[in-house]
Length: 85
Image 1: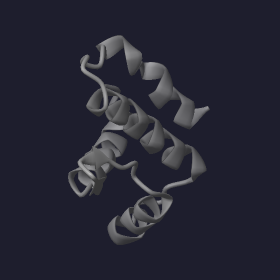
Image 2: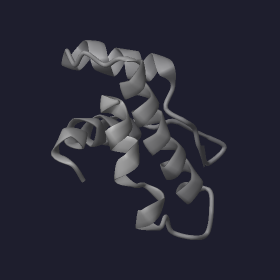
Image 3: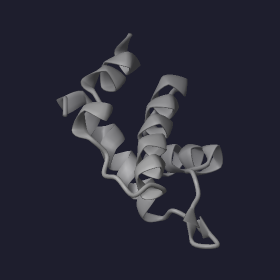
C-alpha cells in the first residue's frame, strides 16, 4: 500500500470495526459515520477521500457477502492514486 494510503486504510479499519449489522448482514459505512470520524479525528477529509473509503468498504462488503475471498488485484493502487488526481 502506498504510504499516502495508510491514513485512509486506518480510517476504514476503525469505521469497519464499529460496523452495524442487520439480521446478520453487514451494513455499509454511512456518510454520517464518515463525517463523524473526520470531525473526531480532525482529519480534513474531502469528497475524494470519502469516495476512497467507501470504495474500500464496497470491496469489504462484497467479500463479506460472498463465499470467495477478495483477490489482492481487485484493490489496486489506482484507487489510492485517484485521491491525488
